Length: 593
Image 1 (tube, rainbow, N blue to C red):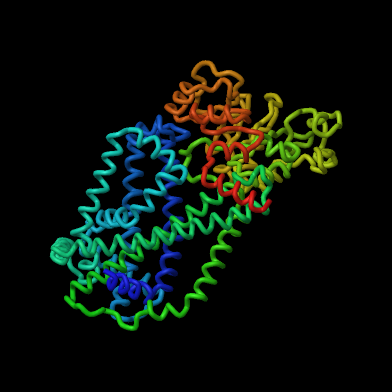
Image 2: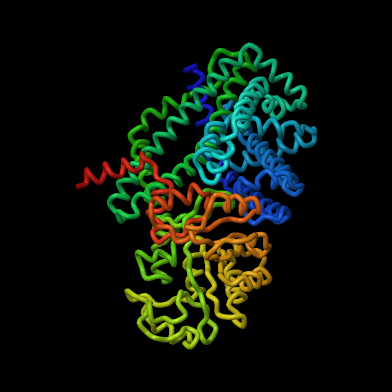
C-alpha cells in the first residue's frame, strides 16, 4: 500500500501544476455557469409554481410542479455532462503521466474535448450517470460537510433528516453508490483510454477489479484520508491565525460575529479545494492501479520519484505554507471588512439578520456610516427608510420632519436636495440619497428599502424601483411599506423586485395577494402557525425589532426568515454561535491581557 501511495504521488506531481491550472480555470468557468443556470432555473420554477420564497413547508409542492421537474432534469444532465468533461481532462493528464510525459493546460482541455466527442459518437450516454455516481463517491466527505454545515444546505438537511425514513434512504443510497462504483471504477479508463464501447468497457472494468478491488479501495481511502487530514490542519491553522488577528484588530462587540463568518468562508473555500483535490487524487490513484493491473507489472510504472526530490524542499515549502495561511486569513478579514456578509445564492435559508436603519447603535441612523457599520457587523440586510425632497430626490430618513435627527425643524418635502445636503444627521454625517446608498451597498450588503407613506400622488414607488433597476440591484434589494398601494405599484413597475407588507397586527389571509412576497411584522405577534401558513403559501416572515437573547432565540424557534435588530453583530453571535470559536476568542483575550 505504501508503494502505491508513493506511485500516486509521482503520477499526480508529474503534471500537477498544469492539472491545478486546468482545475482552477475549469471549475471557475463551469461553476459560475452552473450556479447562474441553477439560479435562473430556480427563479423560473418559483415563478411557475406561484411562490416568492422556497421553504420546507412548500418544498414538496414546489418539487412536484412540472416546471420544477423539468428544471431539475436539465440541471442534473448539465451537471453530469460537466463532470464527464472534467474526468476526460484529468484522464488526458494522467495518460501522459503514466508514460512520463508532460502536458500543458491547453492540451488537457483539448484532450477532454476529444474524449467527450468520441464518447458522444459512440453513444455512451451511460457515462453521464456513472460520472454522477463517481462524483458522489469521490466527493462524499466534502458533500456531507457541505449539506450539514454550509447555509442554506444545512438548513435543508436539518429539516429533511428529522424524517427517519429519509435518513435511512440516504444511507442506503450512499451504500448503493459505493457498491456500484467498485466494479465500475475503470469504465472511464476502458472507454476513454482503450476506446471501448460502454458495455465492453463495463466488462473490462469488472474483469480488472475481480478479486483485486480491496487493494484499490484501500488506496482510495488512504489518499482521501490524507487529503481530509491536510484540509483539517489548514482549517485549524486559518482559524487560529484569524482569531489572533480578530482579537487584535476588531472591536470586541463584533469579534465573535466576524470570526464565525471567517470560519464559514474559510470552510467554503477549503471544501472547494478539497472537492477538486479529491477528484485529482482519486483519479491519480486509479491511474496507478489501472496501469499496474493492465500491464500486470510489479515494478513502478514511473521512475525518478518526485517524492524523493521534494524532500529537499521542505524548509522552503514550510515557509510558503506559512505565507499562504497568513495571506488567506488576512484576505478573509479584508474581504469581510470591505464586503461584509454576502448574499446567499438560494432563497432557502435559516434566519437572516437585518440591521435596523443601518447599524444605528454604532452610527447615526440612515447614514452611509450606519451602512458601513452594518457591513462590518456581518448583517445580511440593512433596513433603510426613504422619502422624497421637494425637487424629487430620494433620500434616507425615517421621519418626515428632520428635527429629531438634525435639530432643524423642517419637513423634507419642503426642502431641496441642495438644502438637505447642508444638514448634519450626527457625527458629521449628512442625510444621503438612495443613489449614494445603492452605490455603497452594491455587492456588499442587501437592502430592505422602506417607502414612507407620502400619499397617493407621490411617485416614490416608481422612482425607487427605477433607481434599483438602473443599478442592476433587483436581486439585492427588497422594498417594504405600510401602504399596500405602493407595493402594487412597485410590482407593476418591476415584477422582479421582492416586496414586503409591514403590519402592526396580523389578521386575515392578506399574504395570499400576489403583490406580497413577505410580511414584516412586530415580533410579539409572530407565531409558529403564522410562519407555517406563510411558508406554505411561498411567503417569508420578517420580524422587528428584536434585540434580547430570549427574543432572538424565540424568533428562531418560531421560524422567522429574517430578524430585524439594532445590534446585528450580537444577533449573529447568539443565532450562530459555536462553542469552539467562543472558547478560542476568550483564551486569546486572556493571553493578550
